[in-house]
Image (tube, rainbow, N blue to C red; front, side, top):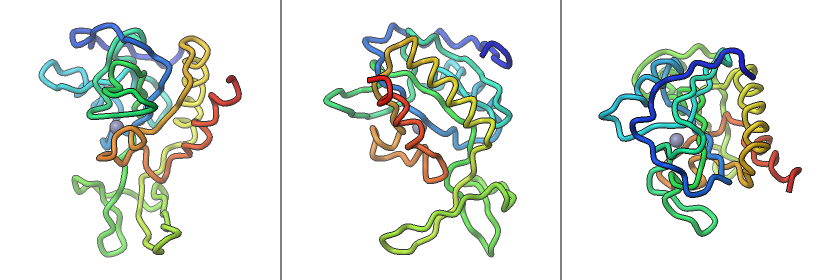
Length: 189
Ligand SMILES: [Zn+2]
């Protein structure tokens, strides 16, 4: 696990976590993991995350796992509110939901996405098709390794997507195999 981890200095925003048995997964809705990590470390930005997993599977570590990161927003899960105080967080570099314009795919800020990076989701209720940026296999494998490590070290009981704790959010979205991650904890409890 030691390879490919870049430590960033973001501890200026951190206070100790009150509990840490929830792990929240996010996508960055941005391009490179490095630029997202830099953004999340800026002093004037009221957001952060414990780490960011890049599309090539390298990891940027931003906040110690025993400190608060500001990733959840107005949130609620299992009787707890303000999940920032009670959860660890992993951001995955991914553009999120895409726009479809004349058969081409674009990010929310207008960057073209090649069609082999696009996951099409058909809503079973109304047949509506939406386009999402695919995660890379190596990124998902590395995130899985990281989750397993955190489950061991921090007694994580729940792995949830941001959208499950904050109704305003759509990450980790339809291209993410959430079930494979959410069920990691059930095997150990
Ligand atoms: Zn999020």
